[in-house]
Amino acid sequence: MFLGEFFCFVPFIYISFRNPEQLKKQQIVAKGKGLRVSFNRSYFAIPAICDLLASTCNFIGLTMATASTSQIMSAATIFFTAVLSYFFLKRRYTRFQMLGILMLILGIVIVGTGSILDDGNGVSALISNDTIGGKE
Image (tube, rainbow, N blue to C red; front, side):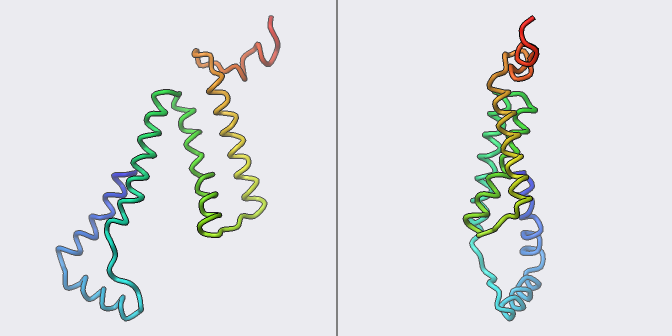
């Protein structure tokens, strides 16, 4: 993903250096519409660094857990996105959406608990025969 975010610069750089007159014309049109034309390019660094940190943590998690557990736990981004959009963007969710988020949290808790209780052989204590059917 970090590489994909970086490649968003390619069209911008191409337009800037290939045809600067066209860029100036577009800026004049944008100013006429009341839009802001100049921006600080370092603003792209903030989400890129956050994505780099998230990917690094995900890869570290892959070394300590199974791939399936790591992938399911990465679904927590949906929860954090919902919480942050609630507070910063003042987004309100319907009951159906809240039910989906609660089901997501429940799934993450179940998978995380199963991973913690894993006996090392890939068999979780939550689903072993001893837990479900009792000892033989």
